[in-house]
Image (cartoon, rainbow, N blue to C red; front, side, top):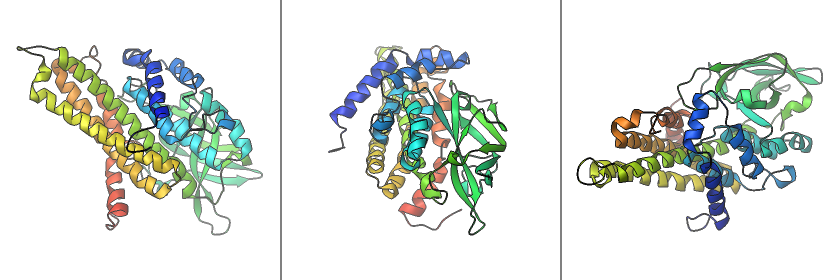
Length: 386
């Protein structure tokens, strides 16, 4: 990134992804979601085009790009009305962690399928009694012969029904200290003792959320990703990309809402001129555009820092990006609904279904309140509040 602009290659990537996603569009996406159907056709086409694994090393079937590239793909999909949450999870979180810390055999086994979309991987960290407090995770892995036994519960785990494997954050006993330490395990979804139950959600999305139950799930030794003593460093390798992707998901969704609202405001005439000529309509849309562009800029900064390997600076920027993008998305969707008036709450005009999705960008994968805690403590040096 130079002079606050993206490279010609990145801009061309955006154009190509937008063109591909535009063949499907919001109406197609919403129809699939409401019918309980999947958007596998779109997912596989993204994979075949090389966009799904663009951040994965070339030797494992990817494009050799960075998190900024996969974030651009995520944003352009959302901007065309096709926000794919598993983009955040499979190539960005799981792909990044495995590419950085997996053995060559693990990379060969899992990364090509993630890159071409034929083998999706979910990610499981959140627990019912822990929420955003990852220190309270109780899912445990204990040694059993040459392998492991995994027991615990997870909640709000995306796309388990579409995934062949789940990258699970668990805790294993440190043989030296006896204390529990975070570790990452790849768990096949067809393992004995692994169960997943869908959670009824209000969001209009083909990607479902699940509660996951693991009862003595037996895993081989090589299910462990990375160094057993790598701890939080390995976990956070996936969390910066997660926040960057979540920000791009949000800005893309906000752009889509804004595009629909401005098109409507240019055409809808009630008095003598289109309603977009009225400041009460125009100003909220202009404000939403400004907020989205500011969020996109800090997201690009976060991606550049992440790709440069500056994890500490990337952590601050990624959290700020996720916060700014969530706020911008909520404001854009709210302005879009209001612009449409009564039409804004119909299915026909396609903006009402974005309301729950936009609120989700404030909540997941980390809430706006926890980001404010992070910035207060790490950026401003204020005392820890929790």
